[in-house]
Amino acid sequence: MSSDYLYQQLENWLAAGIQTQRWRVGERLPSIRALCQQHHLSKATVQHALQRLEAQGLLEARPKAGYFVALPRNTMNEPISRARIEAPRPASVSELLLDIMRRGAAFDLLPDLHAGELPASIVSLNRSVARALRRQRGDDYQYYDDPEGNLALRQQLALHVARRGWQVETNQLCITSGCQHALFLALMASCQRGDVVAVESPGFYGALQLLEQLELQVVEVPASIRSGLDMDAFEEVLERWPVKACIVSPAFATPGGGLMSNNSRQRLLALAERYDLAIIEDDIYADTAFGIAPDPLKALDRHNRVMLCSSFSKSLSRDLRLGWISGARWHAKIIHLKLITQLASSRYLQQGVAEFMADGRFATHLRRQRHELQERRDQLIAQLQTWPGEIRVSLPQGGLAVWVELAASIDTLKLYPQALQQGVIITPGALFSVSGQFNHCLRISFAHPWDKPRLNALKQLSELLH
Ligand SMILES: Cc1ncc(COP(=O)(O)O)c(C=O)c1O
Image 1 (tube, rainbow, N blue to C red):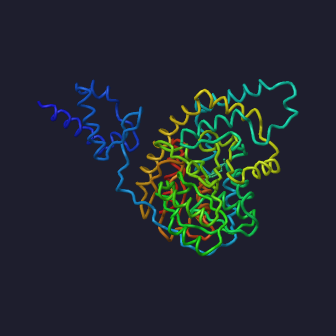
Image 2: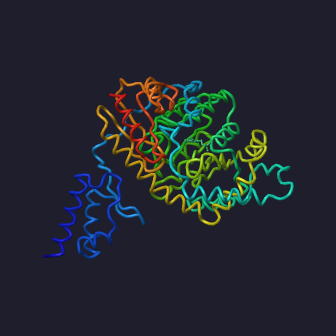
Image 3: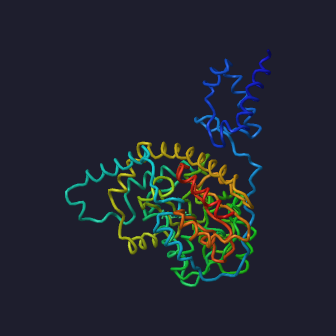
């Protein structure tokens, strides 16, 4: 029996197992060692069979984790709805957002579940924070921290982003109360009431809320769920209206998960220079990349126009309420605005997180989380594939959510109360635009494990829809 024949036998056996769902989408195959033992084959033969299946798109190799059943790429259509370009207008966001946030549901269909144990990394983070609290000196509690934030944390952040090609000094970083606060400071520093701000469409509702509160005008720029901000459309917008700033998420923008190419990034920066724009980079999802985290746009910023905003909310814990901003030419003003809006950040929280980063636990946590998120994305998409009717789903390479486009006749705002009656909370597409162009869409998060109750919630949704 030739060795070709042996690898083909294994290849056929594995392919049949995938076809008959012995291993489902996103599931890990037995290890190479286990396959060698089970089939009395050499490691080279097993590897050869696995690599061939990977080349056929049936398997996906994940570094240090093994081989996983890949998504059948062609069976799911991607969302196609593109925003129209409309004139700048005041921003407004549905009150529904408050209801969703009150229920703790922006990233969970079943927030009441609160199931599952604390992951080991969060237990370890909590210990670091508790240690920092215990280490407080006599009357520390009587003093505010430096408004710029804890130096040890800023040093750790500088080291962290240096791995993504961005060299930043600690005095160019200011700690904030989450990324939302950072975006708020960036807008306040660079815009005045009535100014026009460009955003991705569909885009983050939190940014729209800020524009509403600051009485800024919003102009929505079509964004692709694959490649982010549409640069031709952006240029057209800049030619037509006096845009002051642009909020953009080059890495895994919510809700679509688009990732901007290097060319688009270069073009964005060139346009910023030509039209004298402030660029507000929302980098919050970069650390959730399933592969290597992309470099920030800020790393290419030769003209000091990019304000980078981020936080630990998506990568570590939403409850920390810790974020940061590097404010480019507006940085001094931003520190002042931090002082005005918050005075200072909690010292022991920052110290605890700095310790968690310093001994490599944050990096380890990110590595584990990436695999988990990718698996959850795959499981979610596999479920959505079973929904009847017209449906298109994004395939993000990072982030925490997929964007689901349904038949044009469906209004997901109307679906909200119906789903709520069954205890399921959805995030309707209408929240991601001010122009009502995405009312037939939904954002569904894969931040949580697809346990039985959540799978059931998905099923209930599908039944409600059809
Ligand atoms: C794109 C984006 N930016 C900012 C935020 C706000 O982040 P934080 O919790 O750090 O304030 C979110 C939260 O959902 C987000 O999705």
